[in-house]
Length: 218
Ligand SMILES: [Zn+2]
Image (cartoon, rainbow, N blue to C red):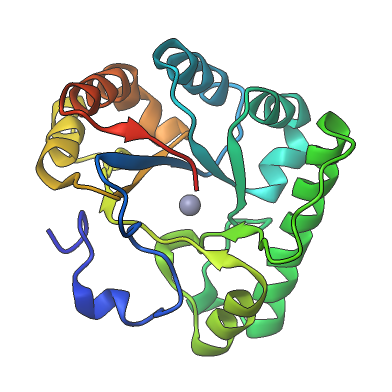
């Protein structure tokens, strides 16, 4: 429970971050962390296309560097991209300068990559890029730094698709148990998750759809 649906107290640690979207009647927000990788991301894109779902991908800069074609395909298919640091580093074990530099390095490769697909891409004046901290932790100063420059997106529901102790059914159960209006739902397009996602992702989408939810991007 503590992991799947973060309690209020934890949410207060980062008061300017978004944990759940208010006033999102019958809508949920699917997010995928840690890609893009060729073994998983293209498959996820095909599943999302099959159901007509748009999602938000929090990407690792180094994976974008290694797999630029997979990155571009996510952009081409109309999904939203967020920053998940360049090297997937945790704020609590890295210094502030190291952490914020890694965040900026990731944003540079994201913006360059988006422009290689959409040359006219520009963010509106008030529109901040999206950021999600790896493992969900940042030190105080790091949080203040990113909250000034990014829209910090946490989550309302972690499916724990990465866990070795869970199977695909457990992942779907987590979605059924904790999804609610405005939920930001976290999956991973990673090697740890793919074994479960092959059945859990279509099943979760079908269940959410049958419950009347629509799917929106952040
Ligand atoms: Zn991550």
